[in-house]
Figure 1 (tube, one colour):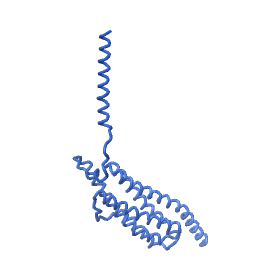
Figure 2: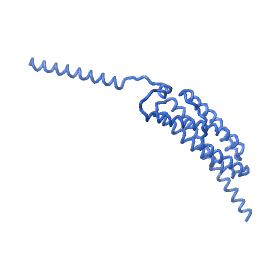
Figure 3: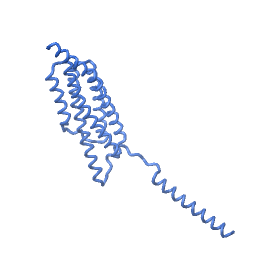
Figure 4: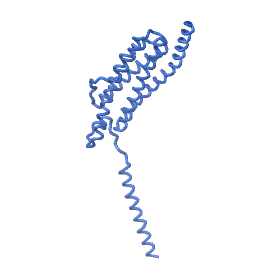
Length: 220
């Protein structure tokens, strides 16, 4: 009996130390860790070339998107003035105000992460804005022009949705949580604008069809 009791005590002591050791390891692995700021995360030294490459892609996309938004700021007032439908005009004016806030968010990110704004032109947005201007030049102010303006404007929105969606993902991968939240806010706004344009298009397209049908019937 004495031997069994001693053996039992030894087993309890062994289990106690084993559990203590496991608990210590768990605390080391899963214990509270200090969260680095976006600035610290982005500027941290790393030997992994993969992360450095991601940072470079992130910086270039950020600069490209900033230039795109600056171009759009110049184009939106012209598009609003050219719109025939009052709801479309309101949509352009509303998005102009949104775009100003979006530019401010981008500038906040540049300052926070100490990234240069750059002076490269976003050729994609340049082409999209050119298309809008050509529509204005080629069509008189009418519901038909509005159909074409909505199509061109949704191309712009889809480009911005792709850009901000990518910025959200890259910021998340790089540990830039606060920055990702800013991009996510803008991404929601771009999707809302695209949805609003789709809703206006339903009415505008129907009205344009009826106008064309009436014109054809009159000529016949």
